[in-house]
Image 1 (spheres, rainbow over the protein chains, first blue to last red):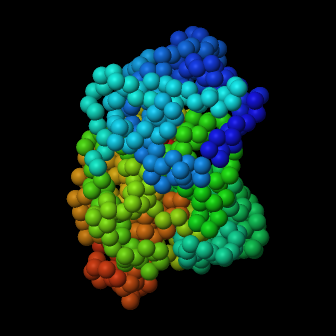
Image 2: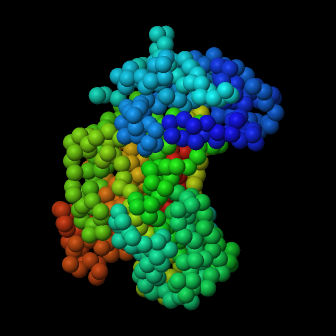
Image 3: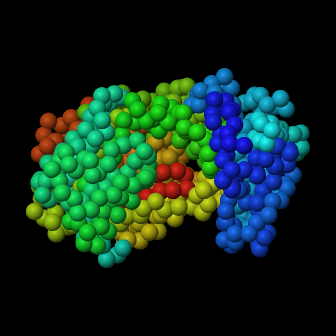
Length: 167
Length: 404
């Protein structure tokens, strides 16, 4: 797979993209897989060449649950990319995954950027977006070997205080 | 850098008009800005033998520009970089001179930042393919600077109770300052209500929380204190400089929190350590106001108030002309025009000289009224120490402390 067209963007993942190629392919099998260091065992995202903590270059894929909560967010009203104009307002969420929270130091975590979407991949209404709310990963299939991990709300108990920007 | 304190200084500054349509090349604009800075310093072509610039594939280069100015360079370097490059390049210019590679360096940034390559990601940048690390954010409609920074701002509001009204005070202050600046694109004073009532761009950013994209070129000339003695202007001496200091995991800084912390957390000890001063010794600050929030976060992180109290600090009146420590007295990125950081250093140099180019009839002779009402004066009384806070992204920043 060399490229995927999505919302007017040309997403390019050449064969030599040793960081991303397998990640999105595994996502097409509806698995959220992260790189885990073969020495210290810590996982990291995005898929990177070396371990950020011990600089080990050996790693293995590890599947995570894809469950987490909204750590921060924004709501785009004025789209920059033309393909997003008909999607506004849309929420971008920074999701903190359940695995490896506060590890190896209290403020570190596995965090991923995605859109907060309904099960049919429309933007979740902005009134529903809030820090603390629980989410799960959902996979938006875009090609035979490429899917985009996105996030949808669940009805699990929120993490900490639920907060959104006052209207 | 304790050994370099006061050994180097800024001796010349210059800029083109700030506009939304320059109708000319980045090369043409750079030449004008450098020529003005050389004239400001009283330097001839034979005196300038070093040149540096920064850009993002959107501008001319030093070796082209130098030919138009009749310069023969002993050193030049065009670096890839955006915000926070200004202060870093001042430090690198000092290093180049200290290493004996050249004697005097002209730094420039030239950008058709509105009519051609818009930082916001529209214009010439819109059609670029998405690859590599950009795949972690751009496919989700997260491309512009505002979109990239917004989760940092939102988390600060969550953690510390910072409000839209508090940060709007930054725009209010900078618009007041711009009303005393003949060069400013947006000279109209605005209120907190104007800011929070303006349309949403990406929450928590309103239109007026964002800076004004601009076509312009700017130049700063650095040389040794020894050479500065023979030049025209009172030098602005460099007391301390920190260049592009990073938080951990700058590839994806969201992983290493707290994300409401910005690079100044690490840069402050370097720059204050070199200068041997504390935040309370600074008379004028120049923050990187790409957004109202970036000003608030930087002032807080560098210790001008306690962490988490940035909202109160920027809305207290302290940062306005006439306040205890005015910030961005030219109106800068939010109102004067977006320069990728250069104009805030230029303004502080002029503050230290006592020669701010406001509406006072005698400003060129240093005669200022200190009447800070609209259309009047913007010279700070007795400004002795200034500080610039450069911002590239939440996890990357630079700083520069100068005195007269």
